Every structure is written in structure tokens, then in C-alpha cells.
Length: 224
Length: 247
Image 1 (tube, rainbow over the protein chains, first blue to last red):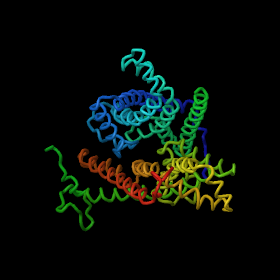
Image 2: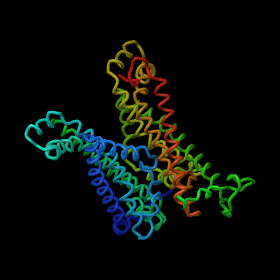
Image 3: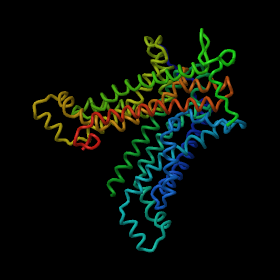
Image 4: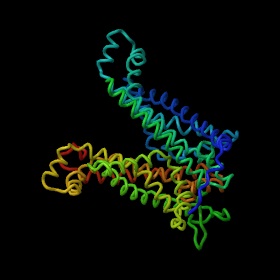
């Protein structure tokens, strides 16, 4: 039995190795989520619009990314854009942001947003029209606020999953939370302990957040 | 696309000479040979992990619907544990931590560890789907089974599970496709599967576009084949008179 020794994980070590990666993971999660929500909403609106060419364009983009085996959480998609990673030292992070997450996240989120928009009773749309609102006003002031509210628990759950998926940027050498632990483990020759702590940290963050989302879901359910 | 060079797959991996007919002989290995063997590793990891995931996922999903609180707790704890840790971290745990903590596992090849890691990670998701499938059945079915004098295991075997599994085939299909795509993380612990092949072959040949196109195509073919097989099963086991096997 191997003796575990966590003594080397002093606050100074944690802040110098892990904190930087943690901040990067959080940044990546939020940027990807915001980009994904924006793109997903646009895609959902395209899908639900009355213009047939918009529907077709939206469907094509969605199906391309949803069925693409490499597009779903697979690190493979990253090196497939070699042009993006050449040059600056920030290459890996740059490709991570802009090629992996928002597009595939947007495709996933467009389905969620579509469900949210379609869950709004038709009467709401008719009421908006009866008040003389244009299509854009109707969407912005009546439909989308309710859709976002309905889908809030799902969006937050998706954010938690996304936070876990950010660990995949390891594949392209970006310095995220997992990489921080790995480097610390290598430098102090204590990989077992650092991986254990990483697992516990990821677990407690994801688990407590999903508990919070469950609470929120119950509260929203009571209101309606 | 005159700059593409598909002959790269015919090159010998040692001296870079183009081998006639593209397959190496007498111990020589071309990139095409390597690609196919990498595909074999991806298939083996995925399919074995799928077996592990189906076995444990179904068991845990069933436990979560039993009337016994202890079993429900066990199933819930299992699901939360494997669902809330990122896959890559779990793979590292199996590869670095588990053999260090449990000495008998020290000699186990990393292939087995990756299969276990990927399988148990996916089992949490399958347990969630199996549970949802069982709960989607009307409560009366369980009661009817018990009232007929079936024991609880018999009720599951003959009444609940045959319908529940038919209902969850579509989500299981996408989970099976996910396992193929997720098997790419096995490269992180040096399993010689497609992603590792792509990374290394691209380094050696500087022909990233051709390599990645081929690898992407193989992933697509694999995932799509699994999709078709499960779709076929879904059609074959459909209960007449019921749409989609369900209601």
C-alpha cells in the first residue's frame, strides 16, 4: 500500500500551479457558454422562422456539427485546424476557445433553446401581435425572456457539463485546471495525490452545482 | 487540391519510402497498416467499454428503481460519482492512481484500465437512461406483476425490463456513438488508437490534413455503423401495434 502524502500541497503551491489553470477553465467555460447561447438562440430562431432558406441553412449547420464524430467533445477536432495553431504561443488556447466550444455548444444549445421557445403557449405570440408588436419585438420582449427562464435549469446543467469538458483542452496542451494539477504532480513527483485531489475538486464543484440547479428547478416548478 | 498527397499512407514508417501496393510486408509497416491497426484499437476499446457500460449501467439503473432504499442509495451514489468527474480525469485515475493504491492491479495492461474507465464513466449515463425508461412505464405494470405472484426479480425480468429496454434504445444509440468518440481520450494514456495515430503520424509526415481527414472518416464510419446496427435492432424488436416500442 502506497503512503499518500498531501503535505506538499501548500497554499503557495496550489496558487502557483493550480489557480492559473482554474481561472482559465472558468474563463473557457463562460466564454464558450455565452458564445454557445448566442449562437444557439440565433440557430433556434432561424429554425423557427418562416423563411425557408433560413431554416435550411440552420439545419445544415446543426446537422453537420451534431453528426460529425469529431465534433462532439473529441479533442480530435482541434488539431484538425492546423492553420489556427501555428504561430503565437497562445495558439492552443486560441483554437480551444474558438473552434471547439461555441460552435458545438451552440448546436447543442440550439435544440435546448428551440424546446424553450416552443414551450411558450401560442397565445403569447398572438397576444404580442395583437398589441402591434413586430416580429423582432415579439421575440425580444415576449418569447425569449420566457424561453430563457423555462430553460434556465437545462442551460445551467449544460454549463456544468461544459466545465467538465474543458478538461479536454489538455489534448492541445492548454494550461487548464487538470494541466495545473498534472504539472504540480510531475514537479513534486506526487502524481497519485494530485490526480486524486483533481478528481475530488472536479467532483465537488460539479456535484454541488448540480444540487443547486436541482433546487432552482424545484423553485421554478412551484412558481408555474 | 493539388497539394494533397494521399501517397503518404503508402510510406514506410521507418524510412519514409513509398511501398508498392501500400501494405508493408516482412515486418515493414506503412502508415496504412498503422492506421488500420489504430482503428482496431479504437474499435476494441469502444466495444469492450460499451459492454462494461451496458452491464453496470443497466444494473445500477435497475437498482435505482427498486423499493429498497439501500439499493437506491447505492445506484444514486454510483451514478453521481461517475457523472461528476470529467472523463479525462477518470482515465488518469485508473491509469495512475488505482494501480498505486491497489497493488494487485499493478500488472494490468493500460488497455484494460482504459476500458474500465470509459465503461464506468458511460455506465453512469446509461444508468440514468435505464432508470428513466423503467419509470416511464405505468405503475400498474409493476403492481400487476407482483399481484400475479412474481417475485421482484421476476417482475423485472418478465414485465418491466422487456418494455423499458425497448424504450431506451434511442438514447442508448447515441450513448454507444458517444463511446466511440470518447475513446479518443485513450490516447492520453498511450493506447495506440486513432487519435494517437493522428497525432504521431502528423508529427512524422507533416501531412496533417490527409491524416486527420482519414481518421475523421474512420470515426464517422464507426459511429454511423453503430447507429445503423442499433437502428436495425430497434426495428426488429419493435412490439407490433406500438409506435417506437413505447406507448
